[in-house]
Image (cartoon, rainbow, N blue to C red):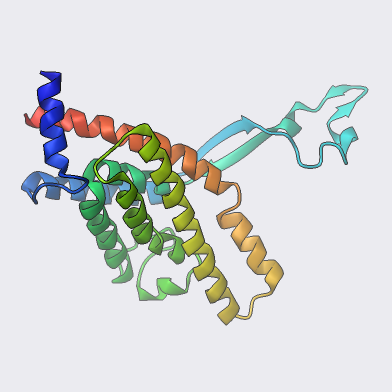
Length: 227
């Protein structure tokens, strides 16, 4: 039974692309579009241990006669899971329909629907964060090209690594270009890049890897239900 379902699933994805457009595909695309919007306005707070960059230069801030300052070894982070959702959609729909879903999201935002973090409308192209959103399209192309229907762990790992880098490179380049047009200083530009990317790249890679693996589980469950 499992082998039959796996064979049907392999035939269904057709080397990385959905076999054909169906009502079920449309429903999944609409659901995926809704997921992106929800992720845009969702903020996850979590904490994790770190080694402070100034540990040795400011030893006294962390170790004293009164004990260890444990708060200095814990980082609080607020994370918006939009990029992992993009990779979940790639895993669920494959490259073709995932890209169409993202393009639909971008177009709806640009024509005025307030589905971007700071609203919507064509003037959003002058927001620094827009170029990260724009980077989702080439990221899906390159990540999907790596997958090619083979969702092995190594392929997923490669796709996430390349895809997340493409998002951040596109975002940084677009943001730098826009900031230069606005005559921002190099210090301001560097600060924006550090805020928008920086450690966020590693969070995006970690959560996107989990999202793609989860997408494969959901795809198999859906296929079993439809079968």
